Image (tube, rainbow, N blue to C red; front, side):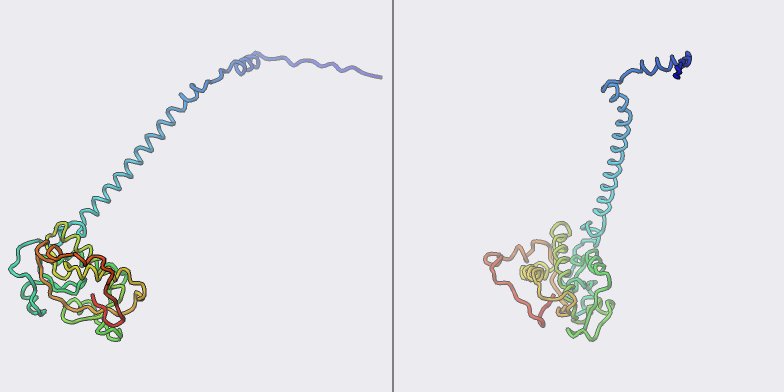
Length: 254
């Protein structure tokens, strides 16, 4: 016995018909219309990126300007350059003090006002993580404090690292002298010292913590840039003559 099933259609409401009509008639957006809708978002991203880039560049310029105005880059800020009645500091610490000279631990030299670059000396003393150490001899048994060393009354011994860093700062001191300060001491202005520091920079056999460098107290002449010294020397046969000085463990000096 079979039975037939009858199915009846559910009534469709006006709302459903209208919805179907709306869905079927929804417009298909063109690529141009889609892009037009994205324009505000793209514009906002570009504006935000531009502002961010401007702020970054402004911060960079501000930082550069700050560094450029620091004592180390300002050639004339460390000392007032003036005409001195003395061209050197004599040959004893007491004479040097009476001539208002300052002892420079960077070069172990008594310097007149014009040649004493206080900003660079301070930067050199602040360079190591711990204060530089000074010894009465190369055995490094007896140490003296930086305060005693700064009195400029005795020859002392320092590490090889001190020597290497000394040379890099001496080059900066020379640059500052020629670029604007206008005065340079006769030791720094010597071709022999430049060549000496070249050898130091290329040396690879000495450990950095080895105490093998003697700092002898010096009394160099202070003179205007170009007044003798480097410009007064003939460099013929001196530059790259393939006969650099050599160092042994007991006779290295600043």
